[in-house]
Structure formats: C-alpha cells, structure tokens
Image 1 (tube, rainbow, N blue to C red):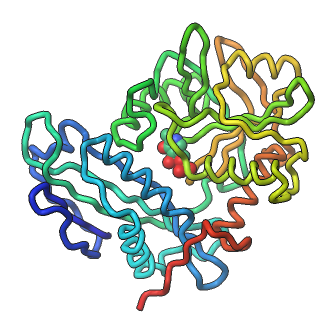
Image 2 (image 1 turned 60 degrees about the vertical axis):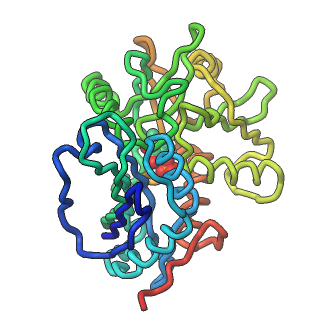
Length: 346
Ligand SMILES: Cc1ncc(COP(=O)(O)O)c(C=O)c1O
C-alpha cells in the first residue's frame, strides 16, 4: 500500500510504499466521528501480455480533489499521486490476473485523523492507496437487473454532497438497498422530487443512461446532467464522449444508430413511463468502473412495473456497443489517449 501523511502545519509528508497493514488511529480521530473520509475507485488493466495501464486516472484525481475540498480535507497534486500509483501498481503488477476482463482494483482513500472531538476541519489527514485483484462484475454473462424507483429514500439533494465521493454518502444507501432487495429488486433507482415530478438521478452506485426513440423518430441517449446530485462518473463521461463523437461523425461505432442524439438533461419517471407505454423505451443501463455497464430489465415505480427491453445476451445494442468501445480502450485493444501506461518496476 501507499501512505502519505498530511498536517496543516507541515503539509504533505514523504510518500511511502510499504506492506499492507492495519492503521493506527487515535479513537478521537475526526474520521471516526464526523466522517471526513472519501475515496476513489479505479483499475489497472493488462494490455496484451505484459503491458499494464490505467484508464483516465486524471479524472479520478480531479474528482478526489473535488471530494477533498467538499469534506474540508487537503487537496493535492493529482499528477503526482498518479505517478505514485503507477509505482505501486508496477511493484504489484504480478497481482493483476491474466484472465480476460480481470484487473487490479485501486482504492485511493483520504481520511481526517486529527485527535479532536470538536466539529471542525481536520488538521491532520492520511491519504492511502490499497489494491485488490478483481474479476468481471458479471461472472456468467450480463444479467439485467431490476430497479426500485422510490422517493422514500433520497441519495442526493441540491446543496448536499451527492456529487462527491464521500464515504458518508454510501452508509446512507445500505438500508434503502436492503429494503429494495426485500421487495424483490436488485438495486435502487434514486429519484429526486421537485415540483411534483420525480427526476431520475443515479442507480445504486452507478450513473444512469436511458435510450429512447424520440417522437420525431431519432434515437436519444440521455443521462442526467452533472450538478449537485450526480457523481461525475469516469465511465459516464467516456460513454457520452464516445457517443457524441459517433453522433458528430468523428467516430463510427458499429451498433449505434446514425441519427443518435446524445443529451445530458433532466428526465422524469413520467417521461420514462410514457415512452415505455408508447413502445419508445429502448434501453436503460447503469455505468461505472466496477461493471462498466449494467443493463436494466425492469423498473418498479408506484406499484407498477416498467419493462425495459434487453437484447438476447442481456445487453441492448447501444449498451453492448458502449461496453465494447470502453473495454477495448481499457485493455489496449483500441489505442486511446485515455489509456495511461504503467512503466515496469525498475
Ligand atoms: C454514486 C456513484 N455514481 C457513479 C459511479 C460511477 O463512477 P465511475 O464511472 O467513475 O466508476 C460511482 C462509482 O464510482 C458511484 O459511487
């Protein structure tokens, strides 16, 4: 693991790579009481036989610094942390499984460690990075999931912390997730009610994408816009940027329609239900580093079920095309400026 101490008096200390081991914290540490803790989730991929790369690590660093600012924790030089993560990954590269679709999950974390019970910004912090080999999210092919769309629980709200990757956002999601499971749904579709309309935000711990046939016949790929309530997902950004390149003619992605329109806009449950009733709801999927894409087959909303079409192999054509485009860039099959090489350990 990698550890770097910070204090308000002396700034960032010397980074150290050392064996994985327990942390030693004062019981009065701020993180244990007021939860100044945030994290990132990224992966190191094998490119062919012996090359290793990261996927858009600059995006994770940008988001981690944004989270740090929101949690009153220290910000840092993102480029410097990427260099340290490269060293750590290179040292442990033998832990990256050789099987297809496997990778090394990387978990950078930042916690406030000041031993002080006053509710105040931490004056000491610890940034650490741990890692673990991981296999594919769906082990036996893509299995579409069911979502419970509810306003009983709220993940994020204007002025809140939903757009930041703070640990405290996730503890509050555990009971709603268990409640959804009890009702027979795989995940929660987080809504936000405004002026009587239920706007969709995110699904579980993933961004949400919806494909509709518009009334003018064009196909629209929609995702809620970033702001206070949506986490700026690296996968979300990669999907919309590739789809936009296809829509503008810069790139030709087989499987995507020529008349594709890509929009970041608010969308309500009523619009999704209407599209479904009119046979215009084409695909719904989650997007995140863990699964890349996660197809949705059913949304429970106000005691009714909205059925979402999925393809033969569990993936709709746009979901499948985006999965291929992203995984090919992660695995170095399609060369991309998003792929950042990890030089071998020297
Ligand atoms: C709440 C939430 N939304 C979206 C995402 C997807 O983000 P990314 O694509 O960067 O993994 C994650 C996972 O990191 C998440 O925790």
